[in-house]
Image (cartoon, rainbow, N blue to C red; front, top):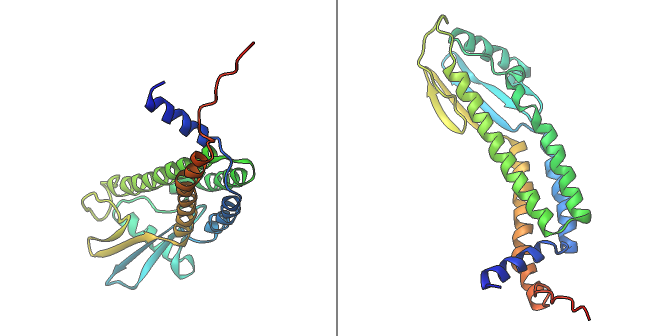
Length: 226
């Protein structure tokens, strides 16, 4: 058996080790911010122009879209979109993001399962799924906004060049300044993802070191049949 193969087998054996007791409690606590993310917007988009000195606000939750000023801003934004031939940015237009609440519910279930009966491998799987879901969700969000700004109706009253609405940061479009930043819900999800990452890193460094010192990762000798 080569040195690399022995190291690989030892790592696989380590992945089957149970989690520290304290890390199980931490995983249960990390579920709280993930669950609370439903109560806050995931993204906030604002628009400013001379004719709108107070600005227009759009709040995108994991399950709905709301406008500022008692939801009146979303109507104003839809009117503006109509003039430039852009589809309205509302929940109906963001139906391909309807999987997000189910994703969060799934992550909560996986985190609790990992806390109760999981091992290092299940913790690694939880982080991989969380990372993939976050990257895929942001990618789909960017793609959706891109299609909004590039699929303009050529018969619209006002003709402008195709554009991509602000996804992160500040951007000028015609006489409007738009800003887009993560909302409280995204920060809560980030707390969950960061916590899972830290717990996993502690297991990979401290937990693996302890397992080596105890000889728990040594090759299991073959059974002698006599």
